[in-house]
Length: 121
Image (cartoon, rainbow, N blue to C red; front, side):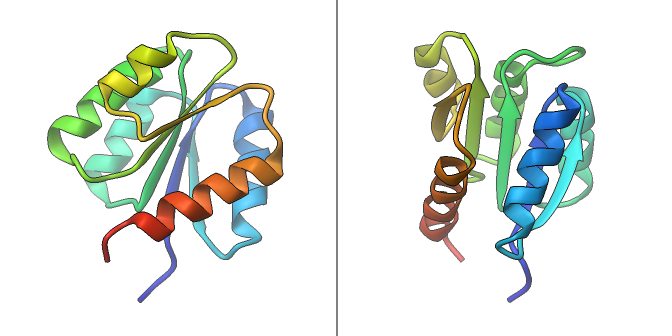
């Protein structure tokens, strides 16, 4: 089986780079995009084992992105990250897990490992 593929959608460049670097350490294949619209375009072109998305982004926010993913890819795990937002709405929209900013990289790495280990192969 190949590397696990993760898509990171966040409008903050430093967060995208930080998450990509932190996850590539574990030999995940990580792609990064700036917003939900780019994310959904990528998702339609190829499959991912996990989606990590910020809540507040231009063009399409994480909530709308999560709802769109759930419609077409109901089993894809989604980690929602937000500095402030309606946690209940995130989970209700289909996010698998919610993490509040600021977050520790170690916590993200551990959550990703858990989420990907629960994924059906």
